[in-house]
Length: 446
Image (tube, rainbow, N blue to C red; front, side, top):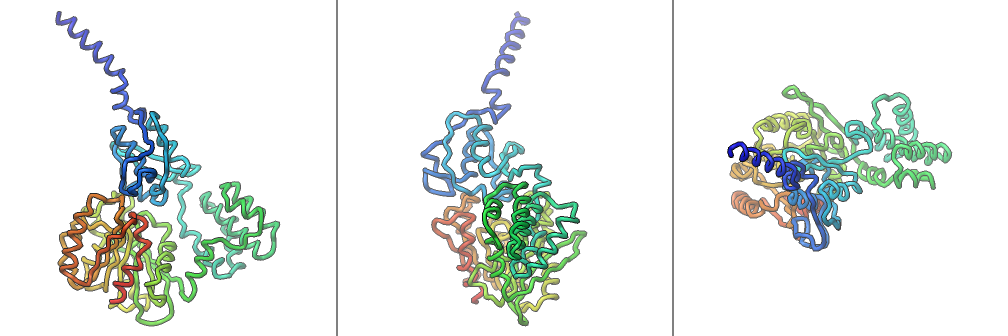
């Protein structure tokens, strides 16, 4: 009897192991999921006829018993994951559903510790297709400021001699070469350059260059306007065995105000465009020095984005070393130094301001959560440091923290009435930063 019971138990276990339920637990990608209109209301939009890519993935992940890693996914591909879509998924496997949602925007995913993480999926392996936009800035600035011959000479030298160019770098250099040759009136050579770019990535811009003369590109025109009346400067600082960099746009003058962006953790290779982005805000005077650092990207390489992580507490000392170097080498009035940042580096701008409030005239923190103990537990240090925070009403990043943020804001303003906190209707985590003039006008005007 005992032997028969054991055999029955064995048969039951074998049958259960082969059952769909257990396979679903073992393989969440095989779970059948659905997502159709009306969609569940989410934090990116109150509408039920659209939702962001990341909200769609989060909902599908939940149906398959998985989580979704918001912070890492946003850091890897923030512009793409916030795009609104209208998927129609009914009874498909999670794997098929994710492919349907992510492939059109060149996104891919990994499952790490039970959570889906999104990242850009380039045509080749990630390492060879990742590239630093800063590596092309000198060519871009030469073209933007009309120094076509110098730009062309540098492009030719890079294409002929560099053995480390990634495919995107080679593609963009060929595009810039085509623009420069079109400026010089050499249409045949320009078309050859555009064909070389097209061979790497058959995009709309490469096809346009083949069809008609294209002496410039939109971002070069933006850069031309933003570089008017300023000089580009940069520096390097060694601290605690690491090398940090800063970049700055410096107008003529002495004892100038300075607005310094701390630097987003994943933007190590695009600091120049973070810097140029600051120039679009009209409330920052044109005679202010603008700077950006790579303290966060350098320190956080390979680390999780956690404000209170003990291993990140060396950031303040590193940032002060960089700040000292900037103030020594640029004509800055040390009484008028302002910190800013968006999202993760917005919170760090706030933290760094509270670390040394005597060093700063104010902080502009955009879409910056305040739950970090380094903020919520040290608000009293800001009694003489005005801080302005923008928060989107539809912020999808930390929606459950809104009530806490309101309480923290009220306490911040009680301690320092010059501080401000704005909840912006209809704005999301990403779009709230576009309204930064509200805070720059408030803080720089004091």
